[in-house]
Structures are given as C-alpha cells and as structure tokens.
Image 1 (cartoon, rainbow, N blue to C red):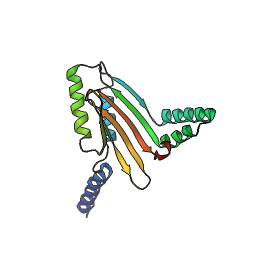
Image 2: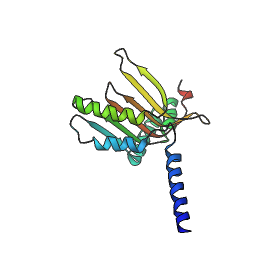
Image 3: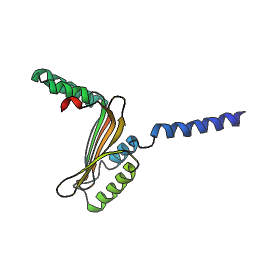
Image 4: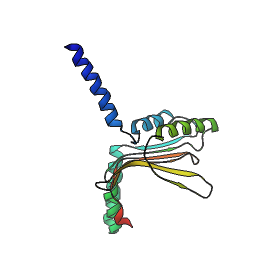
Length: 167
C-alpha cells in the first residue's frame, strides 16, 4: 500500500511540473536564475524590480497620471497593473566569449517559448518578443524581449492587459 501511494505521489509530481511549465511558456524561473548567475560579471548590468518595487512604480505612474489628467496615462496604468516583476539584463559590455555563452543559453531557454513577433532594424539586429497570449481577454502573460545582437533581455512577468485603446 505504501509503495502504491509513493508511486502515485511521484506520478502526480511529474504531471504537476509538466502542467505548470507548459508547452510554449516562458521559462520565468530559469531566466531569473540566469540573470542572477551573471549579475556580478564584468560588463553586465542588471536591473530587477520585484513586487514591492513594481507596486511603488505603479503608484508613481498613477500619481503622475492624476496630475497630468491625460486619459492615455490612465490606460497605461490599466495595462501595467498586472505586471508583478521586471528584469532588465544588459550584457553588451562584457567579453565576446561571455556574451556568446549568455546568448547560447538564452536562445536555448527561449527556443520552445511562443515567439509573438520578431523585428529587425536597419543593421539586421533582431528583437524577439515572447509571451503567452490569452485569447479570452486579449492579454499577454510573461512578456519577454530579447535581442542577441544588442545583447539585451527585458522581462515583464505578470499579465499585460489589452492595449486596443492606445491606438
């Protein structure tokens, strides 16, 4: 009986892990881990804002929107209200070898994620945008922008509401 319960628990754990990660999802924990790993590397700049800092930033935007009286600022508040964490990872000034290593790891991590769009500038540098679309409310969850050529990763973890009203 104990063996049966242990086997069932193990199977449920494996299924829960697969269900949580999901096909096409952004590997949030792995990206944060990679950013933290290279945080002290020469030529790397990291800015992270967790729940508390993000809430403070939203409060400042809200105060500015009320002072401005612009309806578009209020729409911005609605859009960013669901964002829980922001991470900016710039490795443009690190050594060529380290940059290639980071790009290789990021490309591997983001490979299975859902690519929403890719844009290229005049120099041919690509900006890839990943996230999880929710068709029912037109929101994007865990929006990530990654440019291998510019050596930049920008992550907005949480939910970004629909943006139709900003057009």
